[in-house]
Image 1 (cartoon, rainbow, N blue to C red):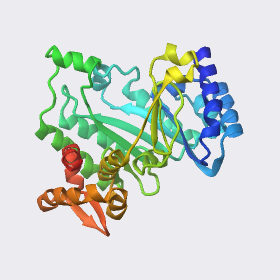
Image 2 (tube, rainbow, N blue to C red):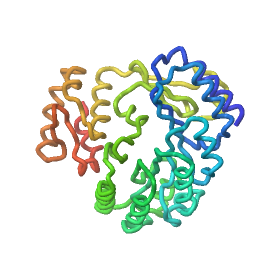
Image 3 (cartoon, one colour):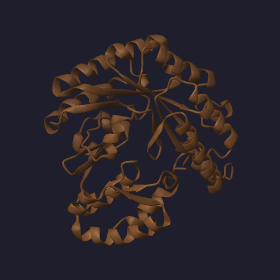
Amino acid sequence: MEPFFNTLKQEIVHYAPLFTNRIETLYFGGGTPSLLKSGMYTELFLLLKSYYSFNTDVEITIEANPDDLTPTYIDDLLALGFNRISIGIQSFNETDLQEMGRRHSSSQALQSIQNAYNGGFRNIGMDLIYGLPWSSTEAFEKNLEIFKTLPVNHLSAYHLTFEEGTPFERLLKRGVYQEMKDNKSLAQYELLCRLTANNGFEHYEVSNFSQPGYRSRHNSSYWNGSPYIGFGPGSHSYYKGKRSWNKPDLATYNKGHWADITEEETLNKDDLFNESIMLGLRTSDGIDLEQLQNLHPAFYEAFSKKQIKWLTAGDLYLAKNRLICHEKSWFIVDSIIKDLFI
């Protein structure tokens, strides 16, 4: 842990002169940040505040596993300045948790949320996974019914994907699992949309739901195309038209040779045009068409013709010069986006 932590501090200092924007959100995630001791976070906060400028109302989020969230640890997080917590629940069903290889139990999942709330967090997010091949729509509905009873302001709900190289993909190839049929996946998605809406949550991005005023400002900045900087192995950054990323290998990262760790690409107008389509259609705000036209007038003409098919089918609609995807059609939004790419 010490070599990684020292390299992380070096990286924070190294990139400070290049990133001059005021920091609006700070997010500790992508792995298991709750493994770090509170004293390490104290060091990181002091370092970040010494080298970067922060807004007074900065949103500071930590991702955490349920079994790490003891009352003492929560007290430490609040004392450090964290004001938002995202808890990796995934399911309240014991079979689901065992199949997904999670180390926490259903009771620990419930207790972690209560601990966070009782400790003083008032901006609490959690995640759920649906589309589980061994499970049922009834089991997922039970998860949502439990969620409705909890002091949670934000929900991220993701359909299980069989990504290459993962244990799930290997089990799929061996025939242990079969991907859920589209009609069953759609039924679970529609159930998710209906029950969250009935509970006062707004569906503001394909996989994200929040009570009014509790959208994830950090994740929203990605979808809005705002600049951001990431630290640590596997992290990504976007600044001044360039996208960069660190290689995920920890041993390479710990050497601290930035030229060997980081790769980057400069986005041209074609890339930015397609990225605007991809990001915009995933949110309830949609695409600003005037902005898109100004970005690439030549591409916009072809795009305007392509969108007619989806408007006619009722998957997309226009509102105040914005092109927006209907909630029901977010289930197929990847296909829509692919078709609209130039």
